Image (cartoon, rainbow, N blue to C red; front, side, top):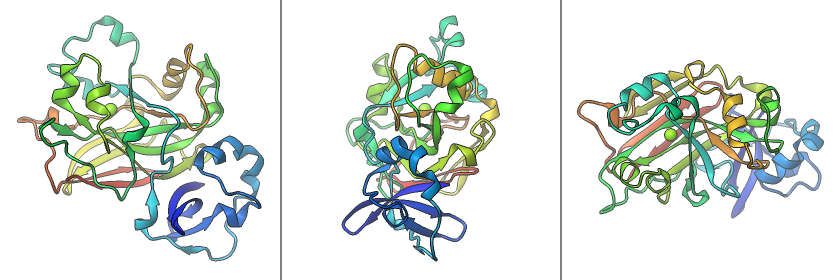
Length: 289
Ligand code: MG
């Protein structure tokens, strides 16, 4: 099933979505007593999932209602760098220039602050005077369902609630300047997320296509079978010594075709529209200003 957070009645509400028919049902209409956000839904999903079924015609889904499915994560969004072979190659002389053997055998993991998350209808703000090298990164993001620590590869997929799309917006000059990446990845509005969460029973995250267009021009076209570190490896790695909680997010890395990898590099400017589509999830589109 697809679950979105919609802007309704002056607030926000978790809703069941039928993307084909463009209809929605507020969960508060389907599950008696449900008045919570996506975090509470993820935590209580096993108890209430049987009740989450369309009832009646539902209401017309207008894309302008969509908010980030997890509007404000409890803590930083885990992100993985250098996780598609072709992307590792395209930035081998810049971002990944100094990577040693250690990086080849372990994933690069960094985080984005929760406050950087915005929704499908929000503009991404170009940070004037701070960076001139703003880039997009289309990514499949895992939403953790069952928490845990030191999760094994064998158990990892049972901890997945579902998937959404993240644009890991990056200031390349700032990313390169500070050795660690959090600064260049965490500017306000630099984590567009959406359009909804697709539950794990409905999508094989290990075999889906990730594409990204800038102003209608196809820039990225990858597929998750090309991941260097697969989804169980990422969950195993991120939970080593760190407890993962329901609602935590792991963005799994971006395919080749980022602006920095073009010759010459092409960075985003005001008015640009970045559209990301992941098969089985949908479309996340944001304007830069
Ligand atoms: Mg990334």
